[in-house]
Each structure stands twice: as structure tokens, then as C-alpha cells.
Length: 347
Image (cartoon, rainbow, N blue to C red; front, side):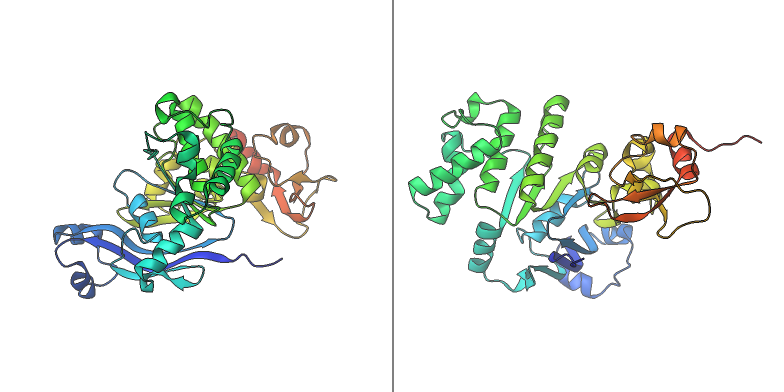
């Protein structure tokens, strides 16, 4: 198995707002409490964050308003300069890049979608999607051809001559997504792109987004404050509080093993069996002691989806395999049943 390439890497990054943030940071230890920093008159929007994001990964950054998630993503693209630390994109330290190098990085490698859509009201759908290609200097025919490909990709074929005011909120969001994809970005930043949509359209856009990711395999940093959305979309979830990452792990592990009391509050109302997959509950990688099923189950199935098997097939362990049929390990039936229906307290 080849090791995944790291696309974004950040080491001990800070973003402070205040009268002299760099000087202040030089005079305090990294573990200075958030409350002390606030007391000293500074806002610690990002605090001691170290994180690696790999190629093709979808990492969801979530937290309550003011937790620092949007500031962190803006630091990744150097839309904001960090106060301390280092950020590398494809191995290059973006803190050392010139303004022109940054512009080229954003134009060629990064796509961005924000919750307010940012569409140009006087331009049609076609010309909105083609706009970043126009800024890149591409010819009219070439950029319109590429824009039409993206419009069709997001399901808006036939509406290319509409203006934003003639579209629904969900359609406007699709235009924003198509525009960000037009430059064929390697890295895709999405800042609460569906938060302004009603629940039904939001669900449809999540489905569309997962479909696009399945086709395009982008490296994605997706911001949300909605835990259900994070669970549905993420390969990993990073939960932020007061500028710091409280926990970063797979949805399965976030739900099963919250690292802090703050993280556990997000999981309290979650129906764990609906979220946790068989691959997230592997107990052993070699033959365990006990009866083993003579068939395998998919690691991609949730415990809820496996309920009928768990109830009717009374083996102590079930072999779990990946999408290629390779054995991942074994699922303990008792542990899975306890997650599904609660612990057996009899006796």
C-alpha cells in the first residue's frame, strides 16, 4: 500500500489579533490558557494547531461560532498571515511566498466556496463560472467550453443564460461550486457552503457534493457547524474550540471515543449505530478466540445496517473486509449489539 501524499501541513500555527501579537507570543509559553490570552487583551483565533491533510482526503473542520474554523482555513490559503508557526502546501512554505507566487498558487491549485455564494449579479451563470478563467487570461471559446462542462457537472445544463436572481438558493450554490471547480483545483476550500439552504435542499447538495467528490477525488477542507453534516461528509473531523483543535479523527472514533468533554457534547444526541461502521469497531486483526462467522461483512456498513445479521447470526466474531475484499479484522458481536440496542444489564 502506497503512503498518501501530504498536501497541506501546518506546525504549531497561531493567529492572534491585538496590538502586538508577535511580540506577545514570544513572551508566553505555548500552553498559556485561552482565558489568560483574552485577559491580556488578545484574540486567539487560531491556537497551537498542527495538522496534516493528505491527497484526496475530505477533512471537515467544525465548531461553534467563534471557534476559529474559518480563520484557520483562511490561514491555509494565506488569505490571513499567521502570527507564529509554519504552513506548507505541496511541500512549499507559503509564509515565504511572494504576493505573485501566492496569487498563482490560489489561481492554479485552490478553489474556494463561501456561504454567501459571491456571484456577480450582472453576469449570467455561464459568465460567472467562466470568470476565474477570464482572470487567468484564457480565451473566450476555451473558458466557455470549460464553464459549460462544469455547469453540466453540477446539474445546471440549460440554465447557463440565467442570471443569479433567476435561480433558487440551491441553484446559486451549484453555480458557486461550478465556478470553483472551473480552474481544476487540487485543493478545495468550502466555508459553510450549505448553511443558507433549507434542510431539504441542503441534503440534496450534500448528495451532490459526495457524488462530485467520488468523481473528482479532490483534497477538501470543509467547514461546518452542523455535526450531522460533518459525520455524513468527512473522512476525518477536526473539532475546534477557542482556536484550538480539541480532537481530530475519523467520524467513527469521534463518536466512539470523544477525547474531551467538549467533544462528547457533540455526540450526546447522535444515534451511534447509525454512524459507526464495522471498520470502526475492529477488535482484532488476527483470528480471535471464539466462534467466527463463515462469511465476511463489509467494513463500509454501519452497525445499524448490519442489525439483522447481528441479531440472527449468533457468532462471536464476524470477519470484516474492505471494498477490495481484503480482510481488515474482526467485529465483536456483543460490542456491536451493545452499540445497537444498549448494554445487557440483566443479572
